Image (tube, rainbow, N blue to C red; front, side, top):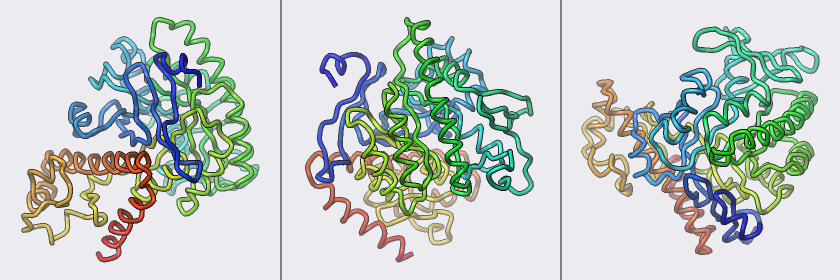
Length: 411
C-alpha cells in the first residue's frame, strides 16, 4: 500500500510476519483511531456490551467494538444513530467500531437457531432444516431476504443495498458486505448457490457503498469488507476468496460454516488466496485455542460473544482452563478466580463473593464476570501480538496452551 494511502484516515499495513508466511502483526487505521493487530474486538450487539460501561471496556484494553446491524435496524433504528453522530458517539465509545451486515442474524434467527444456520427454504437441494418447535421467520431469494422481526413480528426486507444503507446510517468505521450464511448441514450444492448469491450481493454492496460514500461525503469513510464463504470445502473456499478479492474491498471477513477441528486449515486456504496488503477479520471466533490458531494462520481481528455470554452464565476463563464459579467449591473460597489475573474483578473480589452474587442473582455479578472474561481474552490476544512481534510466538503458544489445556483436563 502506498505510504500516502496509509497516511489518510483509513488503511492497513503489515509490520511483522511469522515464519509460516501467514500470521502477522499490523495496524488498521480508522477515522476513530488505530487498531494494533491481531486484536480481539468485543461484541456490543445492540450498541452496548451487556452490564459494562464503555469506559470500562476501554480500561480493559479493547481497541474497538463490534455492533450488529440487524439488531440496531430493528431497535432503535439507524436514523436515530445517524442523527446522534454515528455509532461511536451514540454509545459514548469514541473509538473504532465495526458492524456486521445483519446477514447472520437475519438468517440464523429466521430458522430458530442462534449458532447454527440453514436457509434452504426451497426443498430443491436439501431437506428443510429448522430448529425444533420453531416457525421459519426468514426466506431467502436471489435478490435478498424477507424476514419477520423477532421483537414484534413485523415483516422486513434486507437486500445488499438495504444492508449498506443501514450500515452507513449506523456509521461504523468497518462494515461488512451482505452475504448468505450457511451451515455445515447444508449440502455442497447449496453452498455453491449461496456462494453465487454472496458474490452477486458483494458487487451490489460495493456499488451502493460507493454511491452512499459520495452522497455522504461529509461523513468519515467506512471501510467495506467482503465476506468469504465455502464451508469446509477447500475448492469452494479458495474460489470464494479469489472471487471476492477481485472486487475493490478494503478488507475481508472469513465467515460462514466453519468446522472448528479444521479451523486453521480453512483459514490457511483463504489467506493463501487473499492479497497481503488488506486486513482479514475472522467472524465469530473467540475461544482461546481458536485465537491462537486464527492468528497463526493469518487472521488480523476477531469478534465473538463467547467471553461475555459465558461470563453471564458463570463460566470464567483462567490461565488453567475454564472455571465455573457457580460450583459449590467456590462458596467459601476467598481466593480470586485466577491468581495470575490483574483485572479489576480478580484484584478486588473473591470466588466466594462471585459465587454468592451469582446465586443471589445480584446485578453486580454479570458486570464483574464480564470484566474478567473480556480482560482475559483481550489480554491474551495482546500477548499473542507481542509474542509475534518479538519472534517468540511458537514458544509462547506451547507454554500457554500447555498450561491451559492441562488445567481443563485436570478438572
